[in-house]
Length: 387
Image (cartoon, rainbow, N blue to C red):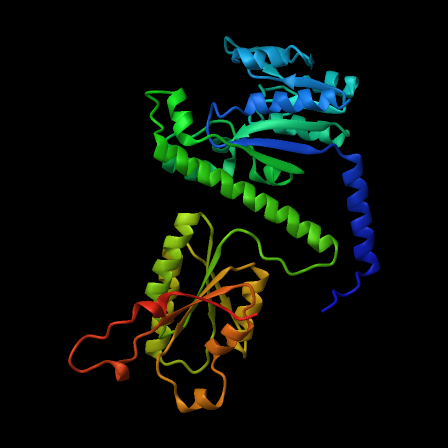
């Protein structure tokens, strides 16, 4: 189906956004999942290659301790010295924004993006210095580690037991025009720091978090690009789990499974309940119990009001870019469901680009009298919805 034509107001907003983007410098972020993966080397190598292509490149800041290979690369590029500051008996250096703006290069290399500036500086944070350079049309190539992204502090601390003092908001990372992970095998990184408390398993977990963040940023950029062209449907590369709650569904099993997947892939975990009229007291109590469990497991709980539950769930799932939908289903076909489509059948037929996992819920009428009811293994597996 052809996308609707944009309104004059939408066209004006697009033009203004494109003009603003054209005036602004581009931001490239080199993201490391741990220290010593080689971010500074990659940043300087990027500057060297840009200079060879004829671009005007300067170094705005670089960390003090560098290896011999990095130092040799620094010597090939112009440096705009930072401002020296002494605070509480310690030397510090801040980005000389005024001198960089006066020099007006095409590209400025800025290391240690999460650095906090001392009191009384032009900006409290270095990333704010970078933003001013971008606003003045200077392209910035910069580097930061995952543990310095504010919204990832808890996850990193859970893995490493440590928490960084200086941070950058994730919104600034997501606003980058380009983000590249500086990758290195955890085994190789562990060898560089024998005796480090961060073992290979922890490094692997940090690396996975960084890869997922980069994938999310790329998804957002592609989504925005498609929307600017009038394309509204897009399914990202990240898993998003949605559990559909009903009074009699096998909700605990669905929530436990969804929670495990969300924890494993660090992805969004959602639960949805479409209000039903005429529920008895026992069913109402069961729904409240399910919703409470969903919240305890960290799901984003959403309660919808709709006359057509299947349509409401599909609309919600598409809006949230859900990739897996968990639904409960009775094994017994009632006479009504033989005459009319039941909601689960309609979900299967209409849920394009999503996986539906069907979880049979207990049905006492089907239980054999001689042994406890057991669900066949195949019934809980993923089912690809027809497109």
